[in-house]
Length: 186
Image (cartoon, rainbow, N blue to C red; front, top):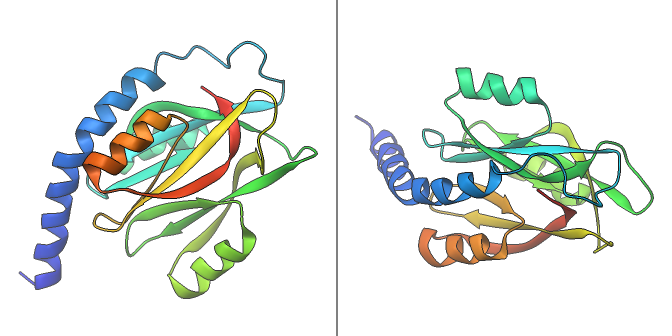
């Protein structure tokens, strides 16, 4: 067995043991939703949150078929609705770009096209289009969509729950990378 294979297996075991409890906590919160909260404007859609213990990757999509396919064929587990994003660009909103790195097994989301392009050129990410639209600053009824990074497992993680963010940083080795955008709470 090569050293890289041993390292990957070791990281997968650590991630499964360490991150699975975070997933369990989040599932109870995420799956309790039955549609957007009252007061959420028309033109929003669910941003589903998925987790793959095998790839140590959080994956977010607005497409139910893609969500179901990832669950059936790629070992992802649904964690419910992360938040609601805009289906189309509106005044004051920006694209939430989706990226994928096949070598590290990480999905990455950013609103900054320069960061998107830099990640594609220098870190091996492929551009996968726009996941949805978010606001670049707080608007009435929106909450921050926190972005975190775990350098040990190579996973980007996003949440609207500041307690979940803090818990992931304290117990699971994630580092705060600020706010990816402003979204509607699930």
